[in-house]
Image (tube, rainbow, N blue to C red; front, side, top):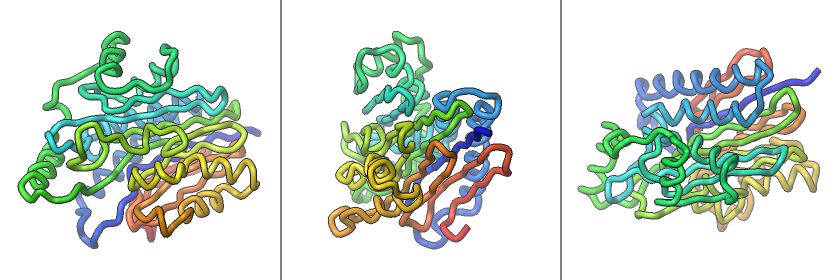
Length: 303
């Protein structure tokens, strides 16, 4: 009997004890559960993995407690610049957007690129124009400037502190037809330079899916994940070295550890429905559900 499964992440980060309040953690748990259910429902009804990962990530983009869409971190100029990628493991088709402003659901814009553009990657004003052509919902800057992100931006602006924080949201799924898909979306890092693009929209860096290996979505220090091409590293270790999925993720996390130091996390799923959630941080917002089994939602490493 074929199985189906979905795995989510809402960002991996190293935090000091008490830095994440109980109230905020509770909001994030609810948000993870809602996004998980949105994607799982599609799979349970026989829908495609591509639809499931898009639905799950859209839910997180709508949630101001996650760094994607509405809750995106702000650049040094106080603006939200959004990145997203989606990939179909069956066809290897992908849609990617980077440095996009005003688009409520960057992951749906990436899906539109996959389905309706001859290109894979659209950025900046070109991506926004494509969103308008496709009739996707947009909003003014105030929509993305939540109380939380505005406070973080003001603190950075006043202190001239180095950029901090690197949360991302992502989903990987296997559907009843045996196909894999991945979706990743982010607002980048707090106080990032204008025009900075992270690993999330980099195919092979933070996002990759292929039916002959696995689907992977990464989170953490984007520059580190890009330089290691860690999403593709996992797929390569599974495909060419026949490593079990969790071992492949662990090996990728440790790749050139002396050169690629930083927070790293990843979720993955293979065509047999085996899942992996690996990270080197003390916080990794994560959730999964395999078939009809009970959903799992966690934030802290010890859970």
